[in-house]
Every structure is written in C-alpha cells, then in structure tokens.
Amino acid sequence: MEWTRRALLASGSSHLFGRAKPKIRGCILWPVRATSRTVWLVVQLHTDSGISGLGEASDAFGFASTSAAQAREMEQALAAFANLVKGRSPLEIAAYREAAAPLARAGGLLAATAYSAIEQALWDLAGQTLGVPTHSLFGGAIRQRIPLYANINRATTDRSPAGFAASARQAVAEGYKALKAAPWDGYLRISASQGIDCTRAIREAVGPAIDVMVDAHSNFTVAESVRVARELEPARLRWYEEPVAPTRVAETVEIARQIRQPLAGGEFLFGVSGFLPLCQEKAVAIIMPDVKHCGGLLEMTHIAAMAGAHGVSVAPHNPSGPVATTASLHAIAGLGNCEILELQWGEVAWRGELLGPPERVTAGQMEIPQRPGFGISWNEKLASRYRL
Ligand SMILES: [Mg+2]
Image 1 (cartoon, rainbow, N blue to C red):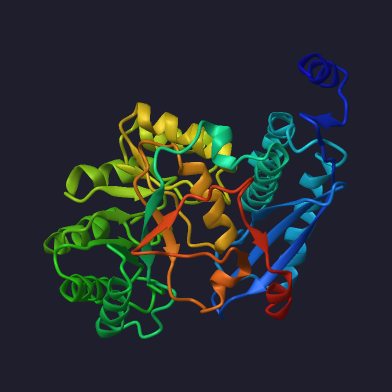
Image 2: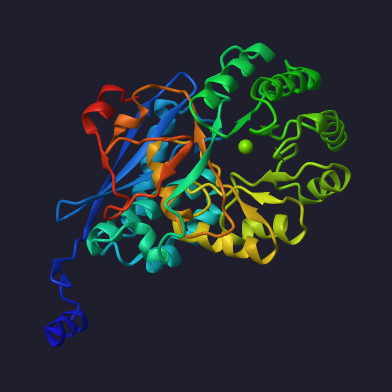
C-alpha cells in the first residue's frame, strides 16, 4: 500500500519498494592476464544481500599491462574508496561522489581509476537493487545498439604495413565499419614515415567506405603533427588522435588550425573540468572520456553534456575488458552526441565468455543491455584460470 511504502522510505527502513536494500560490505579485485600486453583489472563490490556490482580499473598505470605489484597497489587504492561506501546503500552514489571525487582528483590516474571503478560498481548495484537496467537511471536509451570501432593495434603483432593491412581486412570481414591503429607505437624505433605507410596500407586494404582513425599516442611535436597530418590527407581519416598530449591545449589548437582532419583526444582526463579546456578552446572535435578514468558513468554523462554545449562530440575511449565495455554501453545509451564506442579487437578468443551472458558483437555493433543493473555476471571460474 502506498502509505506503507512512504512510511518505510521516510523511516529509512532497510526495505525499498518491498525489496531488501543491500548494504555494501567490501570489494575484491580480479586481475586477469589476457595477453602479454594486456591485463584486465575487474572489481567486484559485494553487499550483505548477496548481490554484487562490477567495475573495471584496467590501464591505471599508463599501459594496458599491469604487474602483480601494480595490481596490489590498485587493490589498496580500491580499498580506500570502497571504505567510503562500506555499510552504505548502493543508491547513495551522489554522497560517494561528493566525498570521494576530491581524493580522486588529487591522487592522479591510479586514484581516478580506483574511484571510477567503485562508481561503476555502484551503478551496477543500483540498477540491480531497483530492478532496472542502469541506463534507465540516466533517462533511458535513445538507441538499441551502438556501432563499435575495432582497435586493431594490440592484436597486430606484425607491425609492417602488410601486418596492419591484414588485421584491418580481418576486422572488416567480421563486420566492423570503422577501425583504428596506433602505428607509431615505439616511436623512438619507428619513423614518422613508417607509421604513415602503415596507415596508407590500412586505407588501401579496406577501401573508401570504412572509417579509419589513427592514434599518435602523443609522440609528435607540433611541426611533426602537422607534417604527418598533411601527408595523411589522401587516407581520409575520420579522426587524428592525440598527436600531442591532450593536456597541451595551446599546442593542440595550433595543430587544429593547420590541418584538415578532426582531432580527437582526452583518454586519461578526469571530470568535466579536465575536458573543459579542450572543448572551450575548440582544440578537438571529438573528446574521448574513458569510463575507467574520467570519474565513471555519471561523470561521463556530465562531460558529454558540457561537450555538447561546445559543439564537440564524444567517442568514449575503451581499449578495455568486457566490464568497462558494458559500463560504457550504459553510460552512452542516452547520449545524443555519441556515435561510436571503441572495442579492443582480436586479443583473446575467451574474452566474451568472462561475462554471462557472453559479450557479443554483431555486424560491428553491440546491443545496449536491458537486464537489471549492467545485466552481466562475472565468470569467476574462467577469470580464476587466467588470474595474474
Ligand atoms: Mg588514444
């Protein structure tokens, strides 16, 4: 009865709409070794009612790989943030943000990533607690599925033009309509022209109908950035990512003025304030918040709203494992200025099976999950087999 429900809510009862309201007990970290280049750090936030929420904290050390010592460091950072929600309801996300965001902002990438992982897990729990998919809590979805771009970089072990072309052809054969590579990785050993040759080879391999993007991983000076961009004009890039670090806003503006390709960037930035200069100065056409580092799902929606006000679009950075990919799907389900999500392509065959139901890509797209919370369970047995 309505009066009973109101009375229960008003009295701060442990029941919510007739459901038991869970309280958070603590978290555990699952470090999963995918390849020699990639470790996925998955966080499980446990409650006293038996349900648990998932978040992902990979790439917190500037690289996709993580050592056992770094995983322990992450465990400690996560424990500090989890302590702030211990004994609390997963519906108190605003309170968590208020208390924890200043610590995340002050603590660098490791703290920002730990903070964001706990935020993700809280949204998963909140959706499960209320019996709705997490994206419903942000206003619902405006699309049933989202196009992905295949990041072919890590799976391409043959770093020659032929190697990149082969990966690109394979991704397109699987149904992807967009792909990205970072052909200047290890720039000290690789010349600008080698990366240009690889990009041209990708374009030649896939033809004109596929979107091709390149990530320069902040390897260049302003002059090099401009020279490479001009040489790449015939490759018709959808975007040119981070030729210099996204914190170098003035330099990025200088590059933008001199080239024709749209610039993209911002993968390690935190919060609305972190992305504001790039948007205000029109330094980039596309910002790339990462749900693992930017402050989590709610912050991503705020960042997207701010970007929208500046005419900037959003393509979330997500060279991540399957949990961050699911969190990203929920965060962007209702964002009008987000058209595409990154997917790390071709790493290991068992990736999809880490989740139940298994992660699935169909014709280069992923469905927005409709089950309560994130709508996924964690395959502990498989994760144990590949534990770091
Ligand atoms: Mg990047």
